[in-house]
Length: 501
Image (cartoon, rainbow, N blue to C red; front, side, top):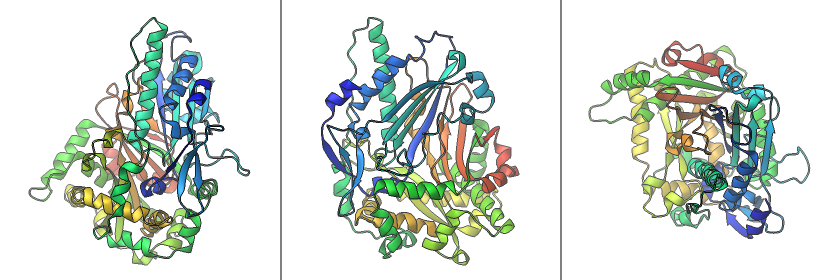
């Protein structure tokens, strides 16, 4: 750590609208490694080397040691203080549960007890009250019983990085660890150099365009003079985090993981494409997203019919959004990467948020219809058309919408709650989570931690040792999750379900 502190330089980086829109969440994953070769303690993910590699990596990601600050104009920035850096939490501990037990119970982190309680889904200070600052990164290395394996938990404030920036950090940590292990064995190869861009100037020129292509139901939300959105936006990051954390805790969330084999995905895609509009090209992601959207919205509708009382997220919708009886559309949001859509040569090195949520209003009657191939083809068509339309001009306008005033990002965020039936889907296959090799082989499994809000879905690639296919990770309210695992069409696709782990 001392070597890292010597490298700290004072700096201030203002966040843009895309950063701030996602500032109420962390990106957090568990990387599970099995000690297949039964290496001794000092040869399998050795603690000293792993920690040394972490702090060397931190030298290349200095904002992780910063503090979030809201200035007098309502703008949010990351302040790195040379004399008092906000050092990330780094913990290395052991538990009395073996890798085989964890694997047989669906990699259930609850078996590890409360040792990972600090693995927060929302950026909040460690204390409920007081002046403690939010830690922008938290690491926990959990060593399993009998040196049978290791769980590496990595949580980073989403306002600092998107999925690509997050995995760039974790892969670099693994790369430096491999290099140190080689050096300890007498190797003398130099550490490969990497370039990372953390400043926000790269995108600032794009946020100066007026908007006329964003869906009116979404863009109009930033025109409302919402006292609530202004109040939340101007809060300190610590107070805002505590409020959001309190709300999401009331939503009774649960994680569910569904493994769908490649042969079933291929059959689903073939059937849907045969029923699509002539000349329309649908991707596997379009079809999986449409299938997931149909499943979640239908389950939400069933819950609505069976019980009129709803958890806090629906109360929020009534406060900030449309009345229930006005609902005619469901909102399907898809994470779209800006990197291949912009022409700047440095976009691939940028670690900040370059993903936007492409919000796609779809007729509710269509989404809740029987999920036969012809219906799914129509929903997939809405998704494909919207993604195709997400070009550089659209991106500029969305960024302008989120950045034009200190509170516009919060107005936009809360405005989306006007859709009672909404979900967000992100395909994580873009980010190469299974490339994170610390020198002991790639992970046996990579899974997200509990996500910040219900109806968030990650489409995860699978370890090739498991078989080709996808693992669908969903954070849901418990009542919606109960309906989903009873859905015959969905469970007919699923080969394995790990519920509530």
